[in-house]
Length: 141
Image 1 (spheres, one colour):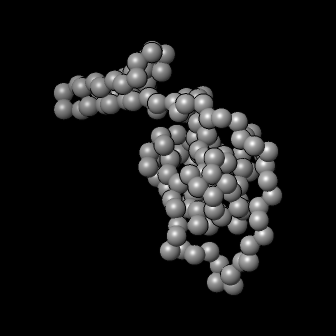
Image 2: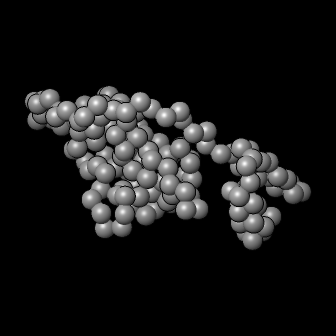
Image 3: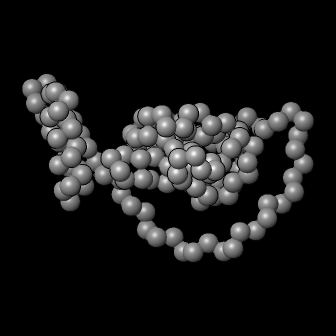
């Protein structure tokens, strides 16, 4: 399957109301599946300051690392607009549900949020780089 044919299939899939599509040509197969939107969450209460915590001289506890992975293939963005302030940086404290980064696919943007409260231990990809499904984006501890 050539690249032009693949692009056309992606365009048609994006324009359709299909939630899943599987296409085969000879021995080659392509499967596309839309991410299922999560139900709208209740509004969050006003942000509370993070409690003061003593920082260990050894740094973060790497035995408790949680890897935040990409939910889809796309382009990773650390800020809401080019040149803007990044959502998060190494050492920042985050709360469950805080936006960590954006993944853009064909002009559709998906927010990647923190799965739990924690501290950013590492940002594993560069701004503007293409990421794969399941690739580790950010590590929290």
